Length: 289
Image 1 (spheres, helix red, strand yellow):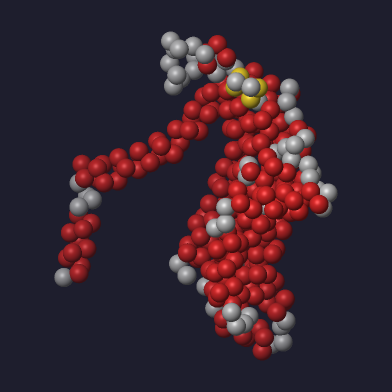
Image 2 (spheres, one colour):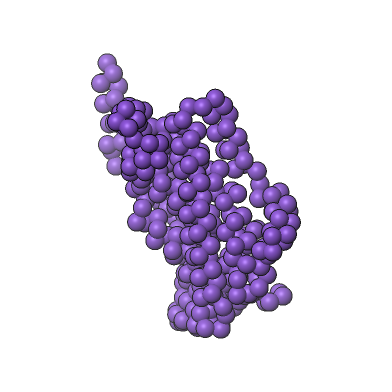
């Protein structure tokens, strides 16, 4: 009876009209909504100013592509420095956050101490605190430490919102690793550090990659802390530099703005394309628990 019901359910998708209505059309709408902003951003980056301001032309197409906006962005603004700052801040803060998250997640999930579960929930709830509330006390701390208007101001404050979620993600993945492996290693005389480095971390590579991509993406796109703790043009990151330097009063340099956003989104897109399988696997291993 169950096999008959399953056969009937699958037959519903066999006919082409039903397949178009239930699969292809919703998928096409989803892909269009997802990719249209990138299409508009890329098209605007290559449009000349005359075509951008022309109300009679086709707004969804370009007839005379140009590289003037990219030339202005790369050679007339400190955009390469913004890109370098963003890369340094994102990589270093991601490394710090992953290191702290691995230690915290392993301690909570594998050491089995009293209060481990409430500690894990408290760490996750810390992620839910809005950055708009935290940046005021963090600003006072950064100023008192003499780190204002430096990269370290961002490197040390980004983990405040990266570590909680990465810890929660790795907790779910560590929980899926059999305890028997760890118990056998303890019987053979391995230390906790050796177990973590030689057994747990190699098995948790998808979870580590997933947490790393998440932390890197959030660091790359972060705006509030970068706007608050950095003021010099040569120290700004891409999200802040593009908005503050390419908007002069009520004049918006749309071509350069879109070119900066396009170049700024490429590193994250490349990382996702290379590690998407590990990312999905890591998220599945965390959420299913």
